[in-house]
Image 1: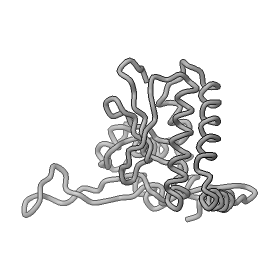
Image 2 (image 1 turned 180 degrees about the horizontal axis):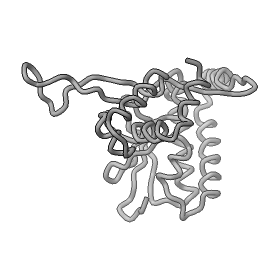
Image 3 (image 1 turned 45 degrees about the horizontal axis):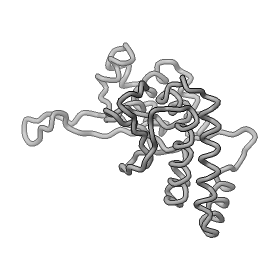
Length: 215
């Protein structure tokens, strides 16, 4: 299935609700949970979830719930999680990834980490100033594609908007990302700081909230 066809599936309001629910969670989602969240029957939810899997928008895994195993534990449940497959459409075609890769390779070769972080922090600060001090931190991060999840006094980021580059140039790109988000928080005057906290499958940056912050 082409990227255009895959993305077009999300034009269906129900599929979009199911997709949005799955990607917003910090755990694999069962058919029952997805159906309840979307307000539809389980069989209808299952049909659309599997369509999203076929399109590469979600991944399906099988696991027994409740930690039970062995005879009598029952059949494994089918669970859904966000797919790591990236879908992008540009009309007319553009190849920004190649340009970004070449620029990152050059910056890494010339050891321009500090210069890149300075630019990223200034850019982030400008974005934060535009958003204003009354902006909601999680909403702003959502709008920038980070898929934030609040965990106590931290906001963990399920998605890294720079993931393809971060895989090949981790110190360079993760440092840039940290500076960008640090500047963003500074610019909006948020009672929060950005730090590094690696977790497999998640963005390497975490936002730590002060106890007085209201996100």
